[in-house]
Amino acid sequence: LGVTQKIVNNKRNKIRTLELVFKNMPPKLQPDDSKVDGLAFIGLALSRYSDEGHPNSKTLQTAFDLNDILDRDYEFLDATNDDGWLVGGGEPGPPRSYKLGKEDSAHAEIMRIGTYDPKWGGVTEEE
Image 1 (cartoon, one colour):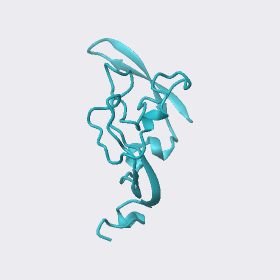
Image 2: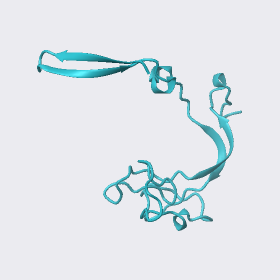
Image 3: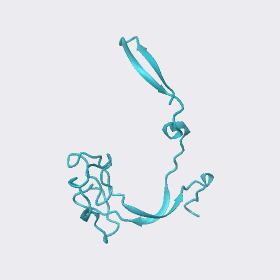
Image 4: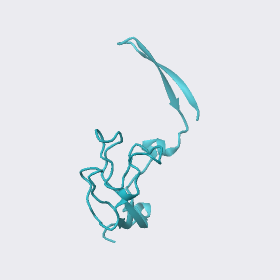
C-alpha cells in the first residue's frame, strides 16, 4: 500500500501526532477519483410499514410480510451490518435498536439501467 509515517507538530497545543499517509489507494477510496451518479433500475417494491420497524417506512405492497422470516432477536443470525434490517419495516434505531435507524427499502431488481447520465452510458428519465 505504500504507507509512510508523518509526525505532525502542533506548536500551539504542544502535541505531536503520528499521521499515516497511504499512497496508491484504490480509486474508490479517493473521493476525488470516484464518480457516483446514483443507481437506476426497474424493480418490484417490497417495502412495508411495521410497528417493529422504522416509523417512516411506507407500505408499497401487502402480499409479503418479511417480518415473518426476519430474526430481529438474532437467535439464529450472529449479526448484521450497521444498517441492520432494511426490510420488514426497516430498522427502528435507538433506543429500540442499537443499529442505525433506516426506513424499509426492500425491493427486487428486475432490470438495472445503471445511471440516468447518458455520458456514462445511461438513459435519461424521459427516455
